[in-house]
Length: 444
Image (cartoon, rainbow, N blue to C red; front, side, top):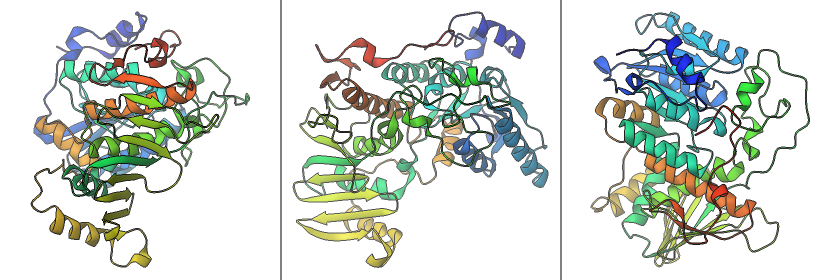
């Protein structure tokens, strides 16, 4: 069965939450002839980069783009047309452009969507796409609240869809090797971890600016509180930088949700906590401090947010595993066994990693998911129906970690958490900390 775009929109806008789709829209499609037809939602700098990456994969055809800003969506549409004009063997130079993601999601000829909107717009189109039978590549953090993380994980289970969270460090060799050393006991018993992550989000206090022509500001705000336009949140036109909406708690979660979604994710991987998480979240001891939050796991291992150092640093009873993007060090009993942090070290990152894998991990019992291309991994899983390297469960649990760290800051309170039931332990927190007030008609 198929639904028309008009009937889908009529159904979606007739209810309070525009996520309720006709039953026929939930039928899972099979990708034909290994060709994945893609749509893109949110055409800022991140999704433009993803668009180029997807375009260059031979088994991808881009059919549509969507943005609430007419300049950005037209620029993305023209990029697709130009690419296919130069590569006519791949597709006709056609690409639809929408201002409303529901129009894109309603198309039955689209297999997957790439979502790179501000965080407060992640869950709503993700769930809509899942329920309409599509697979999803969604940027990190996967959601804007704990409630949304649970909702997205449940939607993936219900629809049996493929979801890749954009935490692409799991497709970078240095992070996988660092975690394999930890998981195989090469640094002894893990005692603690530090993650170099920025400060929490803060309430938006930006002044009003003249409206941006061509921008549907009301739609950009969506479920967030109503407020006047400011170009810091949605820069004018097809901007070439990462906007600072992420610093404000109404739309993002500051550095905690930005790079925390990367580095806390690697800590979870190294500690074998992908399906779980910490049981306690403590704000910094120093009043007003914006760094130093501590997460405590049931084992007693702590993960501490720090402002300096390696992105992720595992401390064990026998050694250390340190890793950042393009940097890696392996220490045993106070001696550096192998490392590459700068050119002055000599060698290269690849040769360092190859040495460690051969000498210390060749016969390792635990081999972690090996992906060397995050987008390729997603596309392969769309075809095979196997889980990707950063599945909804992984991305969802990492998002929960980020949000609860932020909540420990926002409320200056220690939070007690049950990671298996995904709820507060007794007297561990307040229900309102798990969600936020959605502006009508949007909700999850």
